[in-house]
Length: 424
Image 1: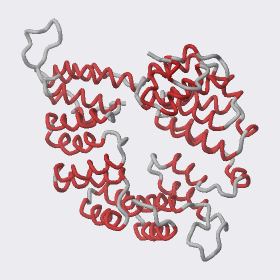
Image 2: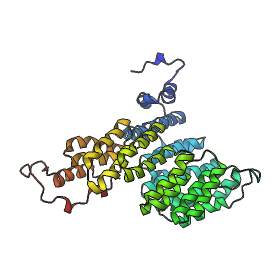
Image 3: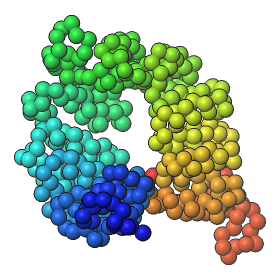
Image 4: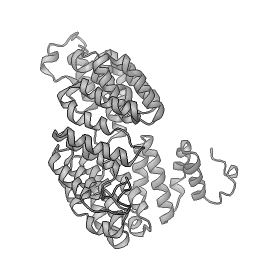
């Protein structure tokens, strides 16, 4: 129950909702309870979008959709006075798999006439990335190619990495490394004399961080020597940078399954600069392959302690270790449980958890995780079908009405192994 008098100075519902989401995000459901009482002003809509953004982090997709249904979207975006309002709203749309709608709205609201080219750049890249995630690569390219980088750079002398970010978003997933490199080099070769010629900081439009990304692309194309030089220059420019050599190792050696070389390169970062939590997980993946998952556990735990929001940290490495060769689903389940208890098992991985449970004869327990997967991703499908198929064709459980069947005549040869199943 909300007791208004316990919030000094809270004179109206909007202030109460703001109190909840600013000071006590764990009480966001209380803020959500106020949504139906809030008015239809620009301020109330902005508050509702902020509540929706927090609910998304908690996987409350149904509540988010209800909030969005209450907002006059076109009116809200037309009345927005700050680019951050537009960015947050479109990002919420993208995270509920409505990227195409977000792209159409972005084109209709004339950001350039109201805000800067740099604002348009940031919003467009976010929407394009969501389009790619939803499988709309051509729409993503159309969105990105409309960005006027030249004017963005003219308006903002501090802006960097514009061409690099666009090229990466368009071509990296296609493994078109030549084009990735070409776009990054547009920034690298653009004079940016903000600092003096003896200053180690960037004198181009390419930041030290993106030099490491450039190195990753060079390594993926096979030029390890040039990649190493770029990381060395980036590290000289920014002493806080991490993971540069790890990026080279993963891009060049992982596809060759050359784990010994990967470890040598990653060790350079691990010993001298320490890896970021995400790359500690990648290192743990290699350790699991070379020494066993028990040897990798300290790295996973360290990464999760440093970055508690890491998703699927234990189960993704355990799945890769136990499933492809041994089909040892029973050994994966404890690692799924670790991530689930941490509150960081995503919908798609909960669907795989359901597959693992079904394989070990725990199909009824699996239902909860299929439902969670549907709740987290409204594009997800076939969850219950996979559960039923695994139970019947692999484990010999007959469907309702066919209890006389004690085993399946079809077994594995007639069905692809679940490690090949797309859960998205």
